Length: 77
Image 1 (cartoon, rainbow, N blue to C red):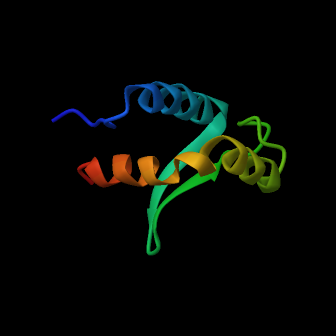
Image 2 (image 1 turned 45 degrees about the vertical axis):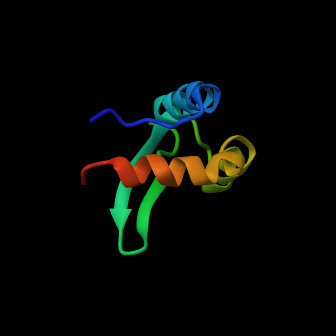
Image 3 (image 1 turned 90 degrees about the vertical axis):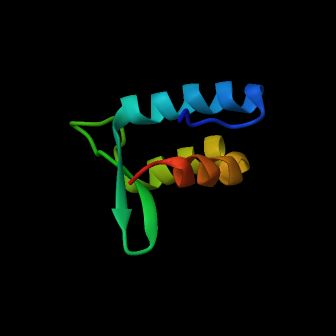
């Protein structure tokens, strides 16, 4: 089964932004509170401090919160 979002334009935007988030140094992990994105700090990732990562998440992903939740729910964990 393909994981997808119904709105094609939102899907394209999220695909690119999530790819960059991962490329910049981000891990996805399962916690007792659910799925969490964690920064990989410098020198292994581009994030100098966790606050930089949180600011980027708010700026680029907050408006897509529901779509990201929908995508993560489709994953077979």
